[in-house]
Length: 230
Image 1 (cartoon, rainbow, N blue to C red):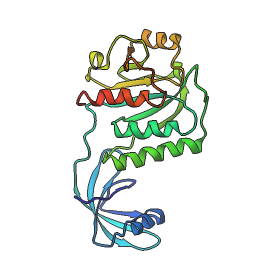
Image 2: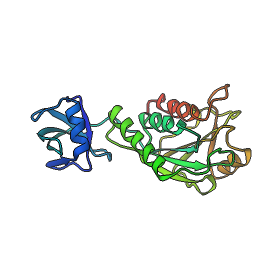
Image 3: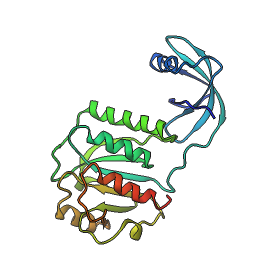
Image 4: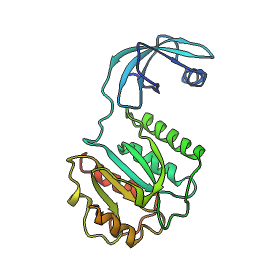
């Protein structure tokens, strides 16, 4: 199986890549006739042959379809509170590797950050794309612009990470449909926020006896779900 994987807009008989991708292929020391894997970010993946390569473009010829990395049985959404600095990049990278279908950014009561600019959102989506490539997923999860927690409409069963909760992840996860997991900012979600989510059917779950940092909690929660074999 070819080692190198490339994101393309869509799979087709002939795929033309621009100067940026062509330079990347030169850096990889690929030559016409070499094979790569291409994926469209929506779940389609295939072999392809590099048929032309110059400074301005690269042309790929589609080969046989291949199976991408296994996805979760139903869509998994991470609702993550806005965090300062580069912490969100770490969260998005790990969440992508752990199989989320999308990341919804949330504005919460204790969040130190109330909004992010379009450039940072674009950067987070690039992080997701690179993480998908690295982890051999054929799906690139979109990172959605932030919405207030009260306005968020989570899909399917909902788990909320909350220190002091009694239920464990393994006790409540039921993969009968979509699953949404929600984590808070530094200082956590307020009791009122958790109560409002619980009133809408969410399950508060513990991540163990220790208090985790805001960028660690999403990884711990998603890792606990991944450990269930899903």
